[in-house]
Image (cartoon, rainbow, N blue to C red; front, top):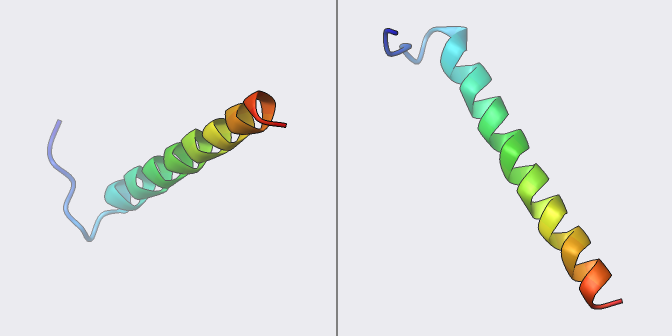
Length: 38
């Protein structure tokens, strides 16, 4: 696969996916802490 240039929407989609993944990991960590330390 070719590396998408910044002008193409591909890199924007990848940025959004990474952002959602980070938010999911943060939410998972917060949820785990909430369960372990009520």
